[in-house]
Length: 90
Figure 1 (cartoon, rainbow, N blue to C red):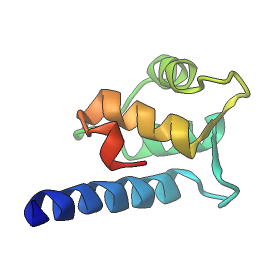
Figure 2 (cartoon, helix red, strand yellow):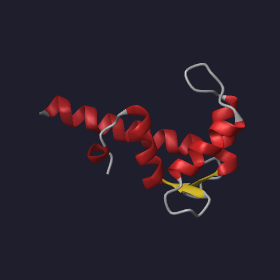
Figure 3 (cartoon, helix red, strand yellow):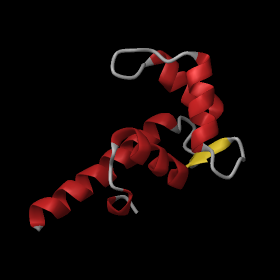
C-alpha cells in the first residue's frame, strides 16, 4: 500500500513538473505556441513531431476549446499518452 501511494505521488509530481516545462510563462495554461515549441524542439522519444501532429495534439487536449491547455486537460492528455492513472493525479 505504501509503495503504491509513493508511486502515485511520484506520478503526480512528474506530471506537475512536466506541466511547468510546457507552461513557459507560468500563467497556468499551455498555449498552442508553448506546446508547439516544446514538442518540436525536444521531440518525443527522440523523434520530433511535425506541425500537423502538434496541432492535432492541441485539438485533442483542448477540451473546452479556449485555445489553451489547462492543468486538468494536460493530465487527461498525459493519461492518454502515458497510461498514467488519472485518479492518482487529481
